[in-house]
Image (tube, rainbow, N blue to C red; front, top):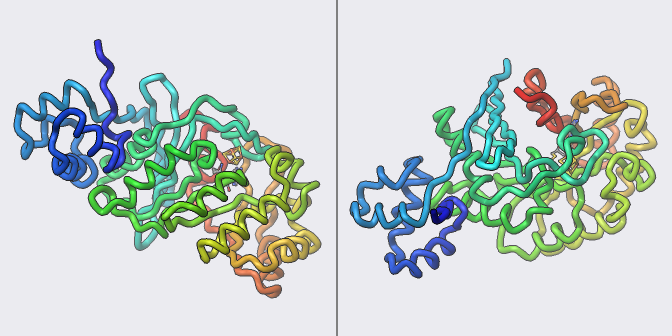
Length: 341
Ligand code: SAH
Ligand code: SF4
């Protein structure tokens, strides 16, 4: 039997070209996209403005492939965590975050992660494989369908390192921002990277205006290498140069994520070092509470975190302590995959 192609793996132009080869008119792509991304269709059968014959032809080559929803859990604050299973039994998690004015999705880009950061549950679970763009998009479609909401924000902060699955992540983003598909504003999509320099440089050349978020977590190489092995490949000087280069092309503010670990990177000397290395970069610093994942670290007490924040602010940096969501269901950053639901 011929294996069917997942239609969700195509972006608009890709599907247009692919259908051309099947001698199917290009305008059909608009109709198919409308059914999938706006009307949330789950099969060709329901696409009633396509002739029965065309639907049959499509079904012989393609399918709309959605992962199985294994389970969901809801947190006290309204955050929902979803566990998805793909055909090969791989599982990933996504999180739906509820804010007063919008719904935000935290999606996974890989099954596991190869970068092995000391503090991260995903990193500890190792790398299995990349997700395809359709597998990324189906997390969003699946959450929209299940929770009956429209997602207006997407952050690549679930499992995996998006810059190490660059092409699939980009294709998924093209579908997210396409007005004929999910129509999410570009500036409402964030790519978070542990510091893959080539990825940052490549992103700078894309005709796309997404938010770049860099996981920094330490103010010098010595400390950063202790908790993020990738720092040995791309030390801070290379990373920050890439960010400067990105900024000189995009002229956009960059976000730095900084998890506060008690007694490791949360002193005033650390804060001062951070101020020094970020000089000249237009940025926001997001201070994150460490979520327990069984590492040797402890979270910084809130008064000390506040002190750190104030220090950064008084030295001219835009800094905020990020509001925590979903920690009671292990849906907070870095906790994904810690507990099989
Ligand atoms: N691989 C990418 C994106 C996924 S991780 C990256 O590392 O940026 C998303 C965010 O969660 C990153 O900023 C990561 O450092 C953070 N994170 C990982 N483990 C965490 C933990 N235990 N507590 C708080 N944040 C964590
Ligand atoms: Fe991978 Fe990001 Fe976790 Fe590091 S923090 S192990 S890069 S998912």
